[in-house]
Structures are given as C-alpha cells and as structure tokens.
Length: 197
Picture 1 (tube, rainbow, N blue to C red):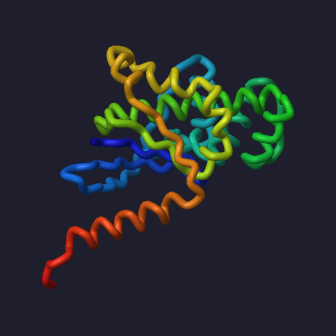
Picture 2: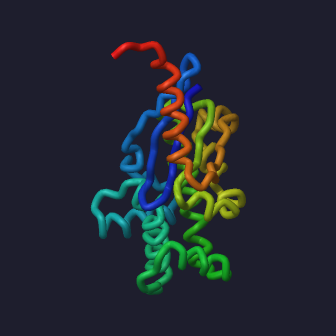
Picture 3: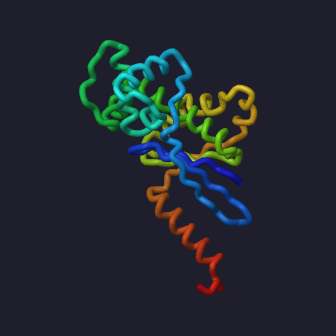
C-alpha cells in the first residue's frame, strides 16, 4: 500500500509510507512548503493578506500552530478588528467559549487542512489512506470530526468518487515518532539478520 502522512504542529510535516513485500519505507518530503491554493473568495482574501506579509504563501503558513494564528489575524483584519498577539491555544480557548472569529478560524484551518491532505494523496497516489498526525491533531480532534475537512478532502473534481474511498485516520498516540522509529529499527534488524558486514 501507499499512505500519505501529514501533520500540523509547529510546522506542516508531509511524507509518505510505502509498504512493499512486507516492508515499510518512509518517504520524507517538504510538501508543507507547496503553494497554498485558495478555494473560496474568503480564502482568496486570506491569501492576499498573508501575501502582503510573507510574499509567497505556502500551505504551512495556514496549516500549523502559527498558521492558525495567521488565519485568525487575517479574518480579524477582514472584520476590521485587531486581535493583538495571540497564541494558537488562546484561539482554541476563544473558539470553545463561542467567539465567532475564533470558531471561523478553526473552521478555515480544517477546510484548508482537508484540501491540502487531499491534494497530497493525489500527488503521492496514496490511495490506501492518509494518516493525520502532528501536535495539533489530538487537540483539535473534535473540531476535525465536525468540520469541513472531509468535504474539502474529497472535493477533487473528477477524482471526488475515488477520494471518498480513501480513509483518513487520526494518530492520537502521545509519541508516534518514537513508536515509528522503534518499528523501523525492528524491521531493519529483521531484514539484516545473517548479513555479514
């Protein structure tokens, strides 16, 4: 199988997991730095605001902890407000308290996250599934479940029906990197037994 791995945290990590002949091959990429493609007038305006600050706008400028701040700041500017300097967790807290701009910031975050994850599946041919990881996924799991993530993930024109069959799975293990490294070491050791250096 071929799987996409995508994780928003302090940045946006993107990779693939290729399984062939019983072996796992992780493929690191710099996919988080692919260009952001807005999908609505609201997202086009967000892109314009972020472009004025950053020049080129990558997906990572929106889909990570600082990206949530960027989205919230852009939405606030569109509404004529100045939110001040906020941290991602403060935006989440405001959303839980019902603040409309914070709620919308998380919604936009999830929509863009879904679109980026779907695009990455298409680029990698990862028809067996996408693993959602990173520090933000466990924290925003409830928002993820009730967001536009899947709609934007699947909304790929002629590939919409195909994308609807691709599962998206959230990794909530507290130490997935260490668990993966251990699994990789065990697999490597198993396949080098009897090999003389």
